[in-house]
Image 1 (cartoon, one colour):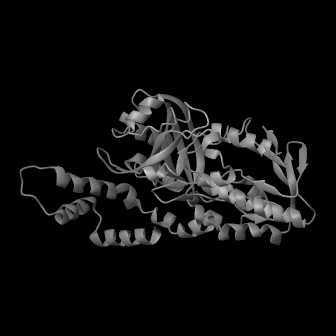
Image 2 (cartoon, rainbow, N blue to C red):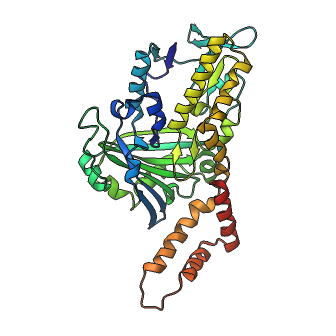
Image 3 (tube, one colour):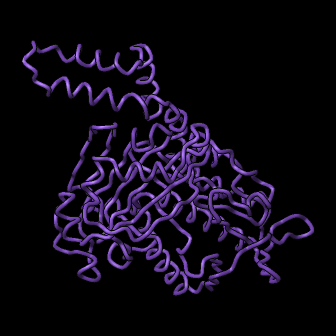
Length: 415
């Protein structure tokens, strides 16, 4: 078995814009939380409606998210190198710095290996994890290039800040076992923010910020078609977000050490509905579209891990039966459908349509801020009932009450 990596080192070309819901990894590696290079465990989650000069936050802290650990922050350069070591220890041959140019096919059309430069490597099964625009899936004839509405561009910066300042600044409980200070122990608490509204200057998408051990990851994810339609620059939106008055205090005295951008998935369920296998060929992770964004959480890494488990079981059965036909590979879809991954994707099928609603990014955050302003601004005028304050705030956004009601029903349907 060979693991082919385009980068000179595993993880070199990977860029994560979210946290890792890690319980699936404990199924694969029982010692994952103590052995893997985890940054922090996430016990505080904040959803922020960002406006020009205000924000409304839903701040959720819960120690139950610490035991058992629910999610962690990771840096892919570190994590992927560790994962590669685990693969090598299991007998896999790691081949870094190799770009796969083409697939090899039998006369019957089954995939039977890869071509890299002038080299050919034969295989009974090729499992592709080559990103959202999987060129190997396109060459296999099971997919075309994804339309822009299925894709987004992520822009991310990483800022250096001492671990103790991060713990204090983000009001994080100090675990007695800090993974970065004490080897083989569970890491300290961390926080994850999801931003909507002025974070993207009205472009469909959102902002993110999460804490690592001694760095902060922060950036934006922007739906590609809406970004192009509005004629805005992803880099300028990213810089605008980082300079928002609500964000600046989190980055005070922090030093920028990394900057990158990456194409990612906006409509995972639509992508997964497309073919994910061919004779002798399977696609996993981002290549297949395994991402769910519900506005509260962005999940990709845990879905990719489960898709890999389903692909591994399919491959094992095919190798045992010496059968690599389309029928044998179609077990992959059945394995996904029978797992929590299939159920979660089915549950999320209406989310992308709901998150296309421009009022989420342009109107409702300001309405919330105006409603709270009406509550807290004691201006010596007679107080209005909350229903009137909220209705006036809604009117000021230009959204009609009937439209807001329809949006509420759509939200219930999507979630």
